[in-house]
Image (cartoon, rainbow, N blue to C red; front, side):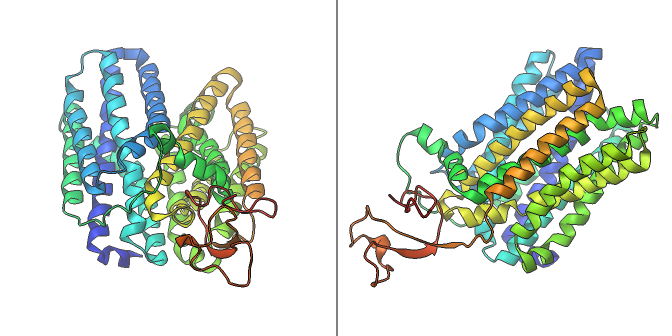
Length: 450
């Protein structure tokens, strides 16, 4: 798997991702301590609001920023966003009012909403070989999982010798290092964008692409299932471990580590599996495992909470979520033209975080109002809905090349250069994606381009 690091451009981009993730992890710990200093016992409410601002920024701004940035080179955009995030981190230690936290969090997450989809859309261009790209996706998954384990440990070690203000300095250093690494890369130029129309139409193209492509509509169902499991783990682990199982604070981290370990184990197994059986045969079964884990854990703990059952369930959640979503980049690359990859990744970034915006508060509110058991069964039902929707929406087989016609195009149109001469309705076959010439998915009733 590490062979992909021989590519210098990818090696620098991956290093930039890892360093920026560590910096973000330090900022998360420092922000929690800052909120406690400013708000005391209301710190949870402050952090909950900040998390909601983060999700709203991701959902609303990613497609808009993608449309605005169509003419900006990817490297310049990513460096500018890293510098913006570094500037916000510089300002955070000087905050004296709660509203200032909210403003700075909005700026920070707006920059992330521009950086992350651009970074994701760059990788398939830098690594055109499918096997290399698959391994890069696995590396990214491992980086996210390791960050959740290493950042708190690194923060704890630093806090033993410095105050939490200095954690923000680590965040600044991370973003500046990321900017330098991106700047050292030579990236391919953006493919020319053929879309026309105003900003609203351009910003909405990625959403329309998802809605019009069956496999991408199915991906939204998988996003919902994963968000239901992830919200359960993130929001309710501390309540389950501390209040119901009466275990130590350190074992909260152990439960979260079980989720991360499951995710990393699945990610390491994915490249050869995807090479053999493809995305459909991996992602859909993994999505269906998520509601099954909810049900199994509910049945196993019906007579009372169980520490081994919790660890097993969290590890299974991690493995299923990783298997369902790690190949997402392969699916998007297969479903969008090169010029439309930034819009497609921005749409996935926005829509997937929309699922989290639903499941995060649902997990918290239901746990408080009706208990963690009711919350778990409700989120399990939501995961089942997403998994069933994905199964129904993603056809099998799902060929990349589709036979279709263009009755609205004149016979001499350049796109029809490969039309088979034996047909009389401009029918041809090629790698099919939604674009200005193919606004609809081909069906028996409605030819593409009609």
